[in-house]
Length: 176
Image 1 (cartoon, rainbow, N blue to C red):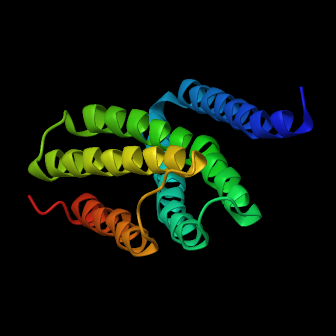
Image 2 (image 1 turned 120 degrees about the horizontal axis):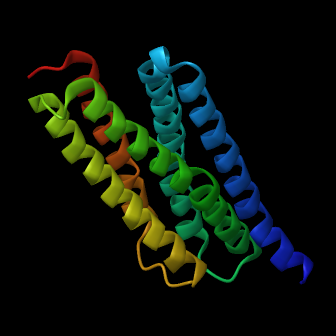
């Protein structure tokens, strides 16, 4: 295996190991402290959401810079690596943990009831759709097939922010 191939798979493997350790520690906390399981799950959910959002806010900013320089440059190759690692090592695992813990919290804490919760879930589905759109963009940039302008990616950078604002308001205020 060449050095380039070893480096490109290394971060993904390390992210998988880190995720497995995180999940094992989570299971241990839930098992060792069953009375506080809901609070532990909530803490893990918040950590995952913060990580997911950090990636969702940074990735389209990378797309802006990447679109400005165009394909075939050394900088373009660097952006490809950064985008793929951010998606695979942070954004994808964080989204998965956020969904798993969030659904458990919705079931355990609220029995999936409450208008605010239903709207929150719809908005999280929208955030997940945006995540999918960004994932496709990572693939297209990697193949030098991005057709979107830097302006498009600047506008897309606002999507996660707006969704996050409404979701946080729903969770904290619970207006209905």
